[in-house]
Image 1 (spheres, rainbow, N blue to C red):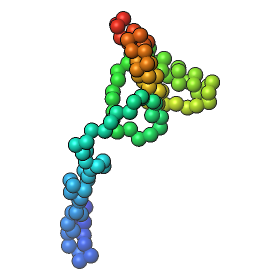
Image 2: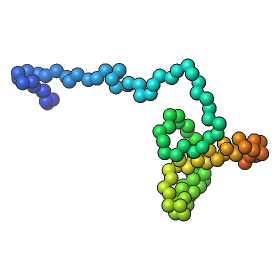
Image 3: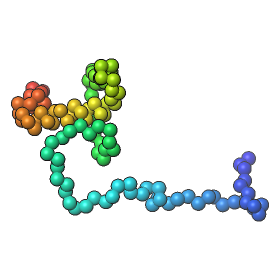
Image 4: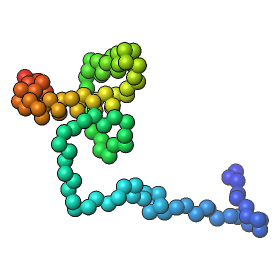
Length: 115
């Protein structure tokens, strides 16, 4: 048998009021303006900061194992615990800097032309 909620007057109580959608789904970032921010001249690894964008990348089991082994090597030899995202952001910064400085002669351009 369901239990009845009673009020101090002894009668059946009402459901508690719940917040509306506006309170639950409030904006967490300021509205974007029409101004386009100037891009930074070069990209560097962002490290442990709040990131505004997300990118999903699918890798093979061998690639994921290589990333994990690299993380463990960094931890063992440098004493630095680095998560996957930070590792990938650092590698991306290196690849983009190489592409910017060497263009089509960069390692990333060469690998992409071979595949």
